[in-house]
Amino acid sequence: MKVETESGDRLDPLWNIDAIVSELRDARRRSTRVVSAGNRRAPIPSPELLQQVVSRIYASLFPRHAGAVDHSEEGLTFFVGSTLNEALHLLAEQIRREHGFVDNGRTSGSRPPHAAEKIVELFAQSLPDTYELLESDIRAAYDGDPSARSTEEVLLSFPGVKAIIYHRIAHTLHTLGAPVVARIIAELAHSQTGIDIHPGAQIGGSFFIDHGTGVVIGETVVIGERVRIYQAVTLGAKRFSIDEQGALVKGEPRHPIVEDDVVIYAGATILGRITIGRGSSIGGNVWLTRGVPAGSTIVQAQPRSETFDHGAGI
Image 1 (cartoon, rainbow, N blue to C red):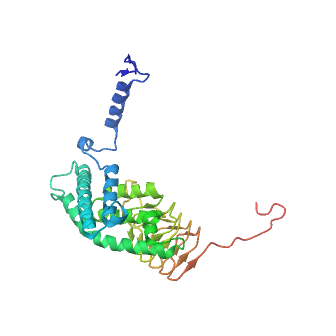
Image 2: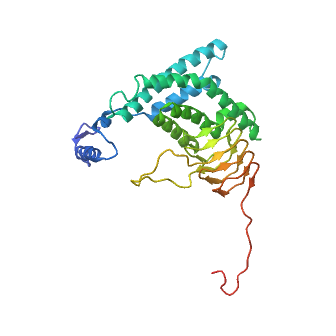
Image 3: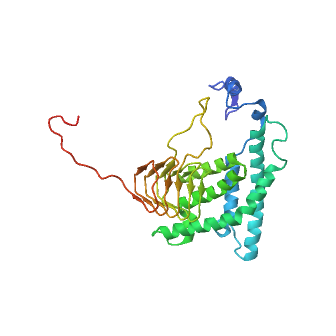
């Protein structure tokens, strides 16, 4: 391969592109990550297009905050209908890509025809309920943060609210049968907010993440109503089960259950399939691997001062 300079001269570059491209092709062929030749040809979901999907769904839910110019009832109705239609068509194509990639090599008939369209239909029907949940989250953020001047400020600028918007969308898709698309949407939120919520996590209404950076919420977490957590909180797994072949067992419950009206302060780490009882308060930087009953207040142990003489304590 040759390149042309500004003067029109054709020069060999300092790198050998043809050889590198050939070696990269051979490396891909040797890869054990892709299990069939068919999978190599199947298109895969696009994070860039899924970002467009989420942006359009956000605009459909909150049109005044996301691009609608005509704020009359008729204008908003037209904007929402047009924007949502675009989003659903894009989403259906991304789910078809996921199914085509995942199903390649399976026996025919393993998935019903038009499965992607059915998922999108059910997803669209769920949007009014999703909106109601998000309204409760926005109100919880406004009520829970004395610095918030309005619910509009909360919706437009709070990273915790942005993360839960993405999560509500991703969780519905995960539940309906598009887990790869859902995971990509979750990671888009993670990259933009620093908040990592697995789309499988079940989160009740009026949920508020304050500040948010460094929050991790695992796949099988169950969170009740009116829960508030702060930055750098981890709701994670304590250990992972291994099968007879030594591979990790996927999907089994391994993350905490957080009941209604719990507050978890900054830096707390809660691990394993344990239950944090209703109305409990978990203090900052607490490390917790056992369940606590309703109404508990858990704080760090107080530091103890001791004096050691003549080498004692070494």
